Image (cartoon, rainbow, N blue to C red; front, top):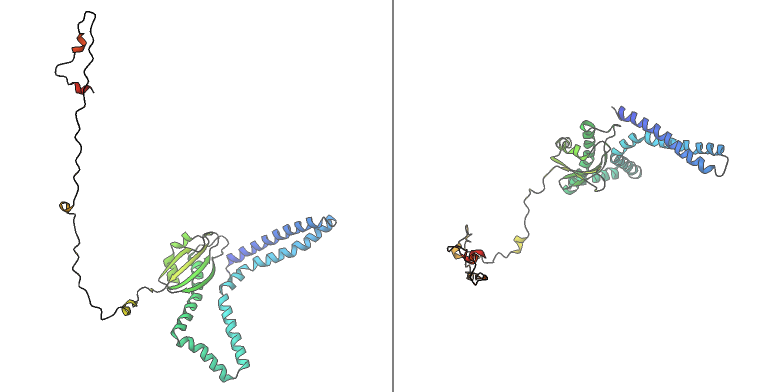
Length: 298
């Protein structure tokens, strides 16, 4: 059984070496520059090396153990729950008689199983634990990871009235658009009806929210409390059927009659007459045709 894949193992080893070198060099030089103000430069270099190398080793350990830490984070709820149950059992068995121990265990196990409300709550949280691992299987099977092989980080899950809600933080190389085309496969893997993806933060596109829907809660018949408010002795009033008009009847519309004022014919000016030196009218004054209307000139 492969706990950490070879690609992730090689990538973490390369990143760990890079983190060691960068941390040791940067911290060592900074420490040597500060120490050179108080001692000889050669002694400052030795002091910087003594400070930078251990810090570089710490950075190497953190980067090298990151795949293991991520795996522990995926199984953290189960680990905490198992440790809590075993601790409770050991303490109960060591401090109480066997009969009391069996009675307490029967109550702790039997009450959630017998009470429907408790049983539904327990099953809802159990499905939250299952869904986190099913999503991890989806990411490992058919989602292309980045160059280092790191999968999206599954943060937390909580039950909802229709299923579960899971928060996921994407790593570089993956976006919400890449997941929207695989929602049907994710629903099959999670044993759900449908799966929706939304951004959980307006500031970063890597923080997503998965809404996993298993059941429909809006199909049940809900009784209205208004029925109990109505007095059964209240007499019923029969109303005449309402006639809905299907067309507009124009003769029934009272439209006022608008009368426009009469427009008169514009006044015409007589052409000015001039006389020549001998007292006769020029020919241009009477040059208009007899059939020509003077009103057309204006």
